Amino acid sequence: MKPLTSYTCRLTTEQAAALEQHLRAHAFEFRTVPYARFAAAGNQLTVVFYASGKLVVQGKGTQEFIEFVLEPEILKEARLGYEAVLNPELLV
Image (cartoon, rainbow, N blue to C red; front, side, top):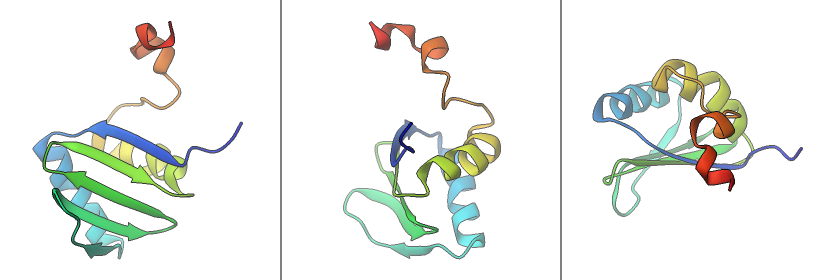
C-alpha cells in the first residue's frame, strides 16, 4: 500500500491551539498562507489550519504525523484506517 501523503480533517479551536503549540515546540517553520490561521512546514510535511476550521496535512511525513502526533495528542482518537467503521456510507 502506498503511504498517505495528504490528509484533511476539521479541528475545534482548542485542538487547533494544541496543534499550533506542538508545531512551535518541535521547530516547525511558520509562514503566512492566505485564509489560514497558521501554516507550518517541517519533518517532510506541511501543515495548514484554515480559518474555516479545516486542517490540511501534506507531504511524505503525513502518515507518520497523523499516527504519532495528530490522532494521539490532538484529536485524542484514532481515525486513520477506520473509515469503514466511522463513515461506511463513503464506501458505497
